[in-house]
Length: 107
Length: 321
Image 1 (tube, each protein chain N blue to C red):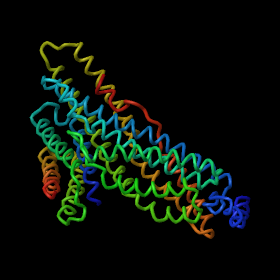
Image 2 (image 1 turned 180 degrees about the vertical axis):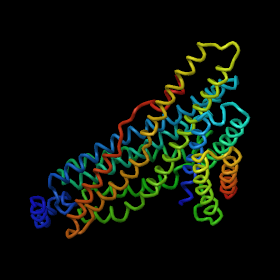
Image 3 (image 1 turned 120 degrees about the vertical axis):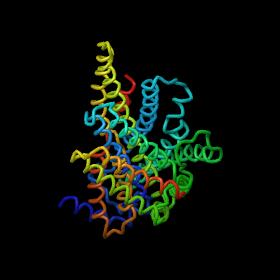
């Protein structure tokens, strides 16, 4: 994956989370829903920060982090499709968020 | 094939026509198909410019409306400063980007005129128009880069814009000074690749802005569903609130479907590919001209298929209603 496509990949993860949040499972406004929503907001913040930086596409650390984001986003989508637990979904989001942090710290 | 015969005839005529001007930049491929392709290309480029500008404005509207919705949902203050800060791009940034796409459009229009063997006067007119917009871009870019506006929200286009404007200016200068066809061809060969970074930065930013816009709208959906749930569980239930929120949710669902058609990124990528195909028609040796023309015709069809007329505010209706 081209590291410059990281922003769009995180966008795909956020879109998947929005679909889950609006699905009614977990119940809207329940503590679990709030947990998911907080994760979604964290990714949103990271994505907006990534738009503003000049991603160092040649950096090996950035490339690894970008690959992690793509893999974890696919896993997230699969877990949502298979009605995975909120904990599983939040774990996927944490991986994406940590990889985004690595890219943000590289500049 | 009729066009092949015409093509062959025109190739043989090249030496003669070259002596009377640079209308032979394409190797005298002047059949109707080339003319139709270049005309379709110019029309699609103009539509793309308008769609791109609308897209940038909508990205701001969607972000501002999202801010207002979020503040309302949290019963927080709504301020003019907050609205301004939530926008994705400043007015100057939008103008610079619109200038850039206009400059690219006008430059490629000038190339299309060359490729379609229009009269020399038309070449001059199109080159002059391209030069005018290029000057606007250069002026705006200089002022934006020398004194960046406070609150700039996007990475600047400094490098790609300055390299592209220099390259385009070099080609246009030769056209306007009635240089020979071979000189113009060589200049296009040398300078055109320098425009690529500008295309790439526009394409990336466009994809990023679309993704952000999609997320803003998605979060508005989250807010609406959450607000409806809270209103539904309120004691006593206020039916008017519920109806108002359900109307917003209906509009949100429509806007979510409409938004997917507003991403100009693919059209910009096809625009770049058509530009490259056009350059190939102009610069290819005579033996490869026919293939280049066929590629141009096919590429312009792909470009036209991707260009969508702008639909103002389609993305932000749910948020602002």
